[in-house]
Image (cartoon, rainbow, N blue to C red; front, side, top):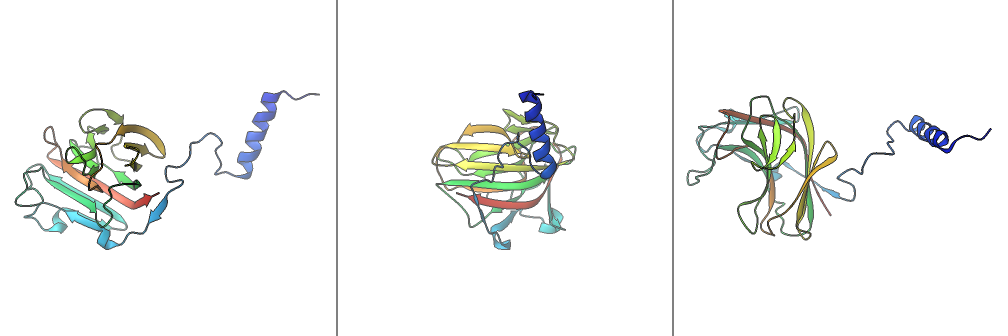
Length: 219
């Protein structure tokens, strides 16, 4: 008896999956494929926090998890700055102006945090930043505009940001899936940051994010 092609294909898929539980013939490539991980040490993690408050009152690092929080009425990170309050990790010593670079981290935003930038690419030919990923009511937006993802409160998510400087584009992945792509703002002195940084308006009084397994890759 001749077996229909569709049945044969289904049998092949089941057979492959049963021999390799991690295989998925229909999933896209991992965003880190083709990249080389850049080793990080403690010196690569510069912490920025309200200038008049001890670090331990806005940051903790326990069991591999970095917890960063800030209040809407906190001071900026520098007495001469007129920016919004922040507690952020600034990736130091790996500034870039060309090539293809990638940030990876597992983030967590508790319910109630709103109007907070949780990740960014600082620097640009035009303006201060190339990318701002901001949380509003559990949703992630590009600055305060384009909706990127929903339902991010109270769960861990994997965030990957790829900046192709020479190609002039930034691509955002959540949990391994591409969710957003946008033209960058030209080359500059660029670096990655994550944590919490208050938006100019419509912010919650308390803002917090947590991060683990932060990595940097490049091509």
